[in-house]
Length: 250
Image (cartoon, rainbow, N blue to C red; front, side, top):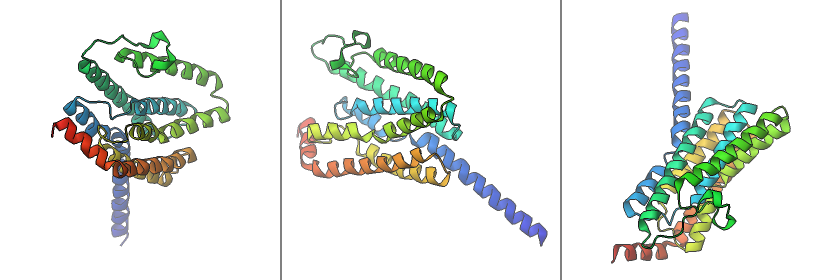
């Protein structure tokens, strides 16, 4: 009897470890997965205009802050790894968009770079290196401030809140882009659906794993913005369909 009970407990522990490991892997890979269909969509159509690069900015800021937050409050390692992978993913997306925009230029426009310090063209530069330089400056300044103030709990908690709040707002630039175009043409619907599924999973994960309150609160906000974008897909469906027919030459 004791042998059977011990075996059953061992099986439960193994299943629990497998589920925990699977959830961790999903957290690490799931953040970048939604951008695969958007990346393929831009490459296939050679048109990055329907995707807002401010989504990349929001995620780069959020994940850089979340990495800094880890040094003050050691949350789970999968979340830290996810932040690093997300930053790499966003740079890949920016590189694609900048490259496609350059190829689409019929008349060579004036180069706009980070060191020009023109507020009008912030995050609308014409070379990829400018985006890298901007984030390097932000990271160095953020790391320096964190180094000196990491002993203050209120500072650490503020970094954590800013990180997850900024990430929660990644849908806002896309909502603005769709509203401006009165269309969702150029935006991958698969990306948004994967956003929603990932955000629901992520928020539940935060609650189950007792992550800091900032994480699950802002995850809920993220779900709300995903729903707004899906509403825009329905609202602008006729103009989006017309834009697609025009692009195909129908």
